[in-house]
Image 1 (tube, rainbow, N blue to C red):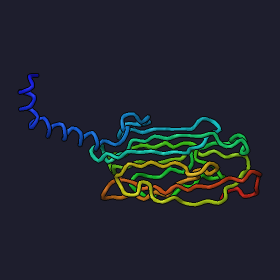
Image 2: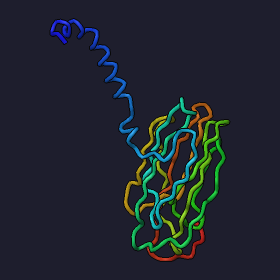
Image 3: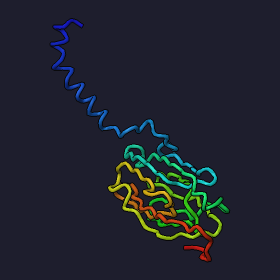
Image 4: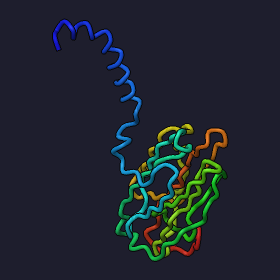
Length: 199
């Protein structure tokens, strides 16, 4: 392009370049690079490899795509001291549009998640894949703050310390914003067998 033409075009190009930069910055970081396990409005079934437990959960909300979220999960091998899982099962299920509080039965740890989307309520039903490690018992349990902090925000949760495990969650559902906030239930596990069937 001739220098004179380029000089004359700058006042017109600058707003366009600023708009493109703003749109780029508005996109969440690596949204399209993240290994999402679902598409919007699509069901999924995620299970950690045998001997691993869920340690990270990420999701991204889109109102225009059915007020739904893309989901990504990461697992980590459990400590050698826990031994191998002795039993795994799908625990209680919740219904879309309702609040839900669930902790793995039989002292299990969360090792997977499955979910189905329901367009009638613009929400999902949820179910945890739980694994029990011999007769080990949870202790030092606590509940996290809301994740995401506000409805419809991007959510990124990682178990804060090695040796803690996700045992369940409590969710609240907003009928107005059509989204959920999660509080994860985290516990340590004993290094010896105990007599409690469920805690």
